[in-house]
Image (tube, rainbow, N blue to C red):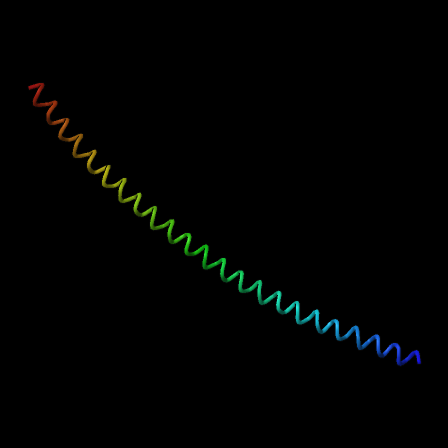
Length: 83
């Protein structure tokens, strides 16, 4: 009688462990998917930031070049006025 009860309890415990193992595997799988998704999101975000920085750099370079040309013209005009 006791042996049968113990065997029954052992069977119930093993079945529950099997269920927990399956659930744990599912959780690990979902975490892996989330991690991959987040890596892609971060990569895409960094790509967009890089493009925006490149655009800003182009604008700064263009403005700097224009400022340099204007400074040169102003300097030339000042020299003509002083002559």
